[in-house]
Length: 186
Image (cartoon, rainbow, N blue to C red):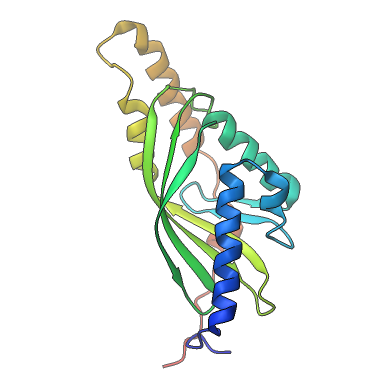
């Protein structure tokens, strides 16, 4: 199969069904069902340059994001098919009610446009969910709901700034930076 070959419609339909089930189960926080969509769970979050590989790591990712945003959910915008992936554009929404890494809860709501690539191998197994989003849009919304003129909020804003700085100092996962350029057909 070359990069120009699109699978048969029944293969695309099966992929789409799996991806939509995955999305539904994530919103329902049914982690066993969500993890069952992968033979080996693997998330790559490009905005934070982190990889969550294996069931325990992905469950930790789910736990941490739902502590930060217990009402996290999505609104689909579009779903597209490629030779080896389903590409989903969506709005991710939630309320920042718990710590997000080193960033303390602000109580602010967010709505961020995202893209997720659900990558399939040659045997039609889901091998990766690769997520892209603009962190600045999210961070602006997380602090945007805090009244900056109220002196009672200044300690929170200082802790948020320290949290941003702490998170920005983390080394990116080498699996995301050690890439090789593909050889493409011309």
